[in-house]
Amino acid sequence: MDIRKKKNIISFFAVILSALIMAFATKNLVRPAGTLSGGFMGVAIMADMIAELLGGSLPTSIGLLCLNVPVALFCAKKISKRFVFFSLLQVILTSLFLPLMPTYPLFDDTILNVIFGGFLFGISITVALKGNASSGGTDFIALYISNKSGREIWNQVFVFNAMLLIIFGFIFGFEAAGYSILFQFISTKTVSNFHTRYKRVMLHIYTKCKDDIVSVYCKKFHHGITVLDGVGGYSNKPVSLLTAIVSSYEVDDVIMAMKEVDPQVIINVSKSEKYVGRFYNEPL
Image (cartoon, rainbow, N blue to C red; front, side, top):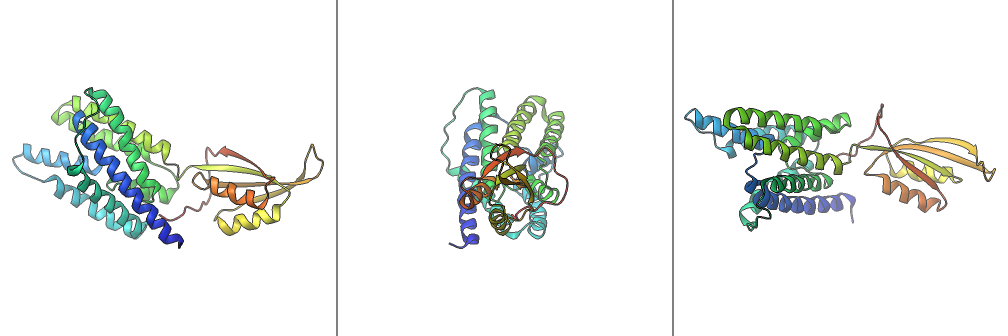
C-alpha cells in the first residue's frame, strides 16, 4: 500500500476515535460537572455571554467560526492542507456525535467528573495528534509553533486557558471557573505526557557492522549519525560507537531497522533534556 494512502487511513480512523471519545467525555463527564471550555470554544462562549449582559447577541457557533477559519487557513499554508482537513473533520465529527451519544453519567461527584473528564478529553486530543491531526482551535496554533520551534507549548496553552477562565470567574463567578481550571490542567498534562512528537532521545549504538547500519539508517531516516571507532574492553576486538538523536516517535522504527542489519547490535536509549541545532521534523 502507498505510504501516503496508509497515512491518510490512519488519520481518518484516529479522528473518528478521537471524536467519539471527546463526544462521550463532553456529554457524560464535562457537562455534568458544569465545567467551562478553554481555547477558542471558551472565547466564543464568553463573548456570547458578555454580549448578552450588554443586551446583544453573538452566537457561539458564529464566534467559533470567526476564530477557527482564519487560523485554519493560515495553518493550511504554513503546516499542510492535509493536517487542516483532518483537524476540521475531527471538529465536525465531534459535533455530529454529540447529539447521538447516549447520556450515561458515570459519577455524581463533581470532582470525579472533572478528573476523569479532563483525562478522557486529553486522551481524545492525543489520539487526534497521534493521527497527525488535531481537535482544532488553539491546537492549530500550538502545533504550528511546535512544528516551527521543535518544542511543545502545552504549558503555555494551559496558561492561556487559565487566564481566560479567571476572566470568566471575575464576570460570572469563581466556582465553575475553578473546576474548569482543574479540568484544563488535567487535560493539558495528559496531552503533554502522551504526545511525544517533539520529545527527542539519544541513541548510543554499539556494533561491528557500522557501514551497513549507517547505510540503512541514512536511507530510512532524515537525521544525522556520528561514528566513533574503538575497541571492546572485554573482547578486545574492534567495535564502533554510533550516536544519533531521533524523535521518540521514531525510536522503535530505528531499533527495528538496525536489528535487521545486525542482530547482535547493542542500543542504549536515553532522554535528551535539551537539544540545540537543526532537527528534521516529519511534515504533518
